[in-house]
Length: 208
Image (cartoon, rainbow, N blue to C red):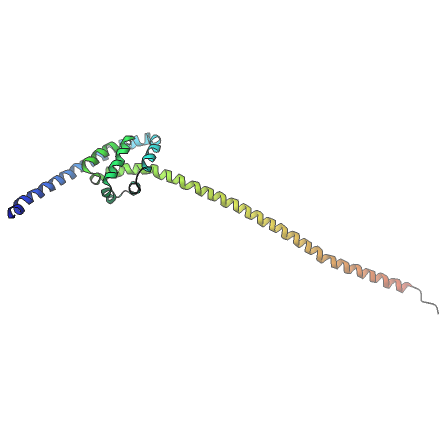
């Protein structure tokens, strides 16, 4: 047992550490090579953008909620937790000939997504440009409809206020007329009284 601990176990650990370091170094080289090719991938992406959009949306809609969030937020912890699903997603992107996806798929299968997070997140970022555009279009439509409804209701409110104003004006004019009529009646009565008095004064005195 003492021999195992002192001689064999350290050698096994050394082998594993050496393999891990070698794997990380190889993954780093692949990531570096991918970075150098980004300009080519960017150009290809722009040229095929219109053609890719509907295909990418179909692939994206089939993803689980976790992977959809990972595509938009892109964090390494999520990458480590969802290794299998990430690899499947990249394979689907290879099928539609998404720029850079083939190189990423090969590297991910060999080293695992966690060790080549840079290239994977590059592909995810490009995919998310289609998703963000689609969501913005969906958000704009209800907003426009709401504004139209608000404008329509605003016009109706103005019409109601105008109608009420007209009704108030009519009521006021009727009230003025009603108030004016008694005054004219009083004046007529005064004229009648004056006429009677004048007539009486003009009558000749009664002879005895």
